[in-house]
Image 1 (cartoon, rainbow, N blue to C red):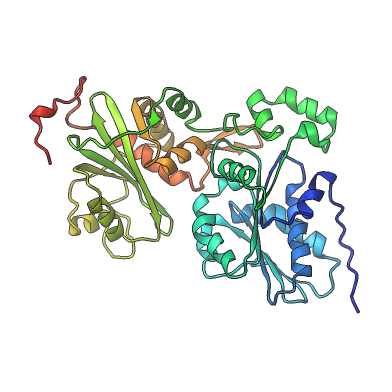
Image 2: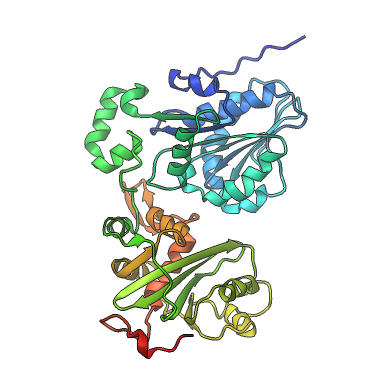
Length: 421
């Protein structure tokens, strides 16, 4: 005999189409306080209770584990409290159901915890703050075995992976459910409160947070003005590799995290960012192979100030490992405070031209790299958010500090006097 379970959740009218969708994929672009997290938590609960699959697994993925714990875990326990036989694992932020289904919360700062699993469905919250690699390289394969579904939710934060996901959803309605929910149209928020927020906030912030504008400036963007100017001035475009100019690289070294490398040339007065590379969990030998496989003539390799101390499991410093593998033209950048380095990067960007294709990931990182918001002072703090954009931004900062080509001409190089490498 079937048992009726009444979960204390009444969907808001705006989310009824989402709960009734048939598409495998979904993208929800919603204003703040719309209730998207609550709707998605209950979507997971419904899926866990109604699935016919054995040992079904569902994931709620947030940019950081602490976000999932502080917000979603409370909702998940509240709405499942009435379900008989439910069991909670506080240390793993996991809910087990009587039918063998399981819902678990994850953060992407430790994405290795996701590897080797399988999922029947997943929610990716605040997707603008999640590196697209997490879905492309990790979650998508984990959904493949059981043809699992995924929902991408968040509020706009410029033209990043979330923006691209929404654009893809618009183009493929048969495969994607999509929704853009503006506060002025949803009628979820009190009109007086919304009007007050509009007076208190900058126009850009209000458009982004409540009117779901992807075009509004990213709140607290570290290099927002500089990268907007680069785009407007046509300095993000196709940049060919000049075989007559030496290439400098700048590295941010990750231990159990991403390692990012920028490739730059000085041609006349222009600093040309011709390439960008990043990987995770690889040894120094991997990056040396990447260098050698590219057709570049290298001048210097700029490394963080602790590269002569950092060990990546070999018992040697990074510089020692590079020398052992034949890379000797290294330079450790001058140690500055983060803010001093960021100021140098701001002054450096106006000199730079970026190859849009080869540097796509790095460019996007520089656009979305932002400061933390300090709720106590209602201002942006002096500390940038540590997320996927941090590593390419740090590598770029090292480039700005250490990039000093010996040949700094105010006019274009005289190619006829240079030997082809």
